[in-house]
Amino acid sequence: MIARFALLIGLVSTAQAGDRIHEITYPPLEAPGKLTLGVTYRLWVPESVEPLRGVIVHQHGCGTGACQGGYTAAEDLHWQALARKWNCALMGPSYHQVDGQNCRLWCDPRNGSAERFLQSLAEFAVVADRPELTSVPWCLWGHSGGAFWSSIMQALYPERIVAIWFRSGSAISYWQKGEIEAPEFPPASFTIPAMLNPGLKEKDDQRFRVAYDGALAMLDFYRPKGAPMGFAPDPRTAHECGDSRYLAIPFFDWCLERRLPASGATALRPIDMSSAWLADRETLKAVKASEYTGDATKAAWIPDAGFAPLWEEYVTTGAVSDSSVPPAPKTVVISVRPDGSALLTWSADADFESGIRHFNVYRDGKPFSPIPAEPKNPFGRPLFQGMSYHDTPVPAPALMELSIRASAVKGNFAVTTINSAGLESKPTEAIALP
Image 1 (cartoon, rainbow, N blue to C red):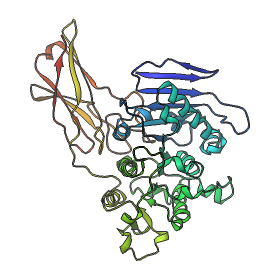
Image 2 (image 1 turned 180 degrees about the horizontal axis):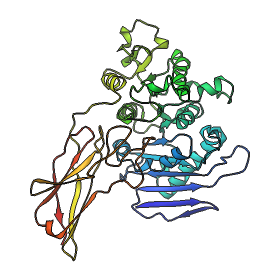
Image 3 (image 1 turned 90 degrees about the horizontal axis):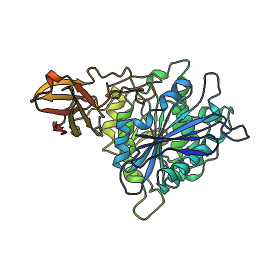
Image 4 (image 1 turned 90 degrees about the vertical axis):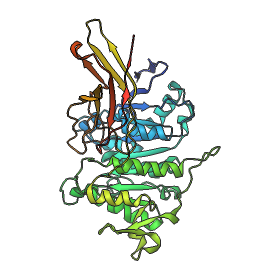
């Protein structure tokens, strides 16, 4: 169930107990320094009764299509798996930008979007009964204009940011050229672990090369100051997100484990740079920092020896392999209808490493039907929820259910999960409702 909010002339709430996704819509404001675009925030909250430890923000890019694509970000089962592991909320903002409007009206957070973001967290804190949302730290994932937004948030709120993933974008080229005002950088902004992730095909693209050049400019700006900033160009893509999630999710996982405040504390923990590896930005060859013979201030940071193989595989192939079996489906139920047909339903958590490709339904131990029959993703590995250019589920994704005609109901049914690496879980037997 989705709880919907509208802030038009005050907050109108239709939230109900047990809601998993909450929604707030704000209208545009016509006042200096205020956000002149409308925006919808959607927040997925895990069922845990323990206080939330953070918010993972999945911020879309510029343009009408990107704004529409961002609307489903909070529904993403794979990103929810990361959030659930660390007892975090997952936020998907969706700005109401139409074609022809200046993206910087929102992607520069100083134009009111930072204020709206903080306001939404305060509203969600009340409606979701999660008061800690006003103070917990954030992981920022940004694509294109969303990465532009994140790069300025890095300077404005460094004490609140666990880590940042910059997919094909940043604001640095624009403030260096004087097109926007350069932010001030407190010392804490140079302690945030971040990964720059342009598409390699952007490098020579007339429209999108600014994203690739901006990534290198960010390295040149941050690394001489000792910042833990990495560089992971995607060899398969241009500006689309491709399979970047298979490195972004383990990167945030690594950062959350080491940065979230210890029990009873409030401050983010610093990164231990003694475990770092360094990589040449041109050859993409990585070694332990102690063995790096080049100029370390120009090299890309890699978290440690455990993360290095994932990074090396990604910058070589554009994806990360997986050998882990996904978790089995939960609560598989078959309900017989009055006409003798039946509805098979289930729930499932995404495989943390590889998400969900599809489900297999079995009858009496034999294959009966895959759901969906042909999972699709034109930008990377096929996924159960589909996948957009913007690393978000397509609208109206497949459901975890199967309608069974009366002549086929007889037998024992079970369901398995297949992850995007093609590995299958153990079967979960269906329970028949009386």
